[in-house]
Image (tube, rainbow, N blue to C red):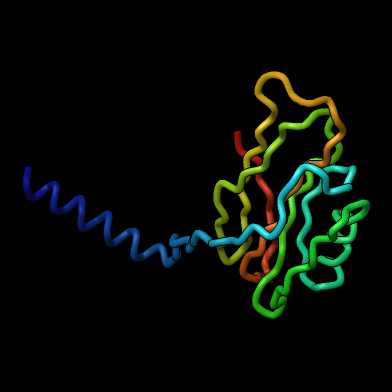
Length: 150
């Protein structure tokens, strides 16, 4: 019986090595920094964005700042090393929505941003809102995938 188990393990090891496939999938968690988060982005349509230059980032800050005094300054971002991603929920009819980043995973093929949307629990103020979050992450050349988790 002992020889049968050892023989099975040897056969299993040899067949895995002989397949020539690298089944290892490098998956690393990434850190991020919240640049701006709130309930009034002035972006009326729901969308996710990847911002890779200051001009594009400035556009979203100008939308956010329209009608505000004092204005929020556009942060300095080194776009050679970093990029900014944004999640915009579009126009909502009540307050109380929140976006939370659960995790960010990066593989050679793609960056995956997992996030959760919390809806109001119970009574909420009846006002038009546009919840959003802008975060800074390390720059990648691969595709960025946004995945809402429950």
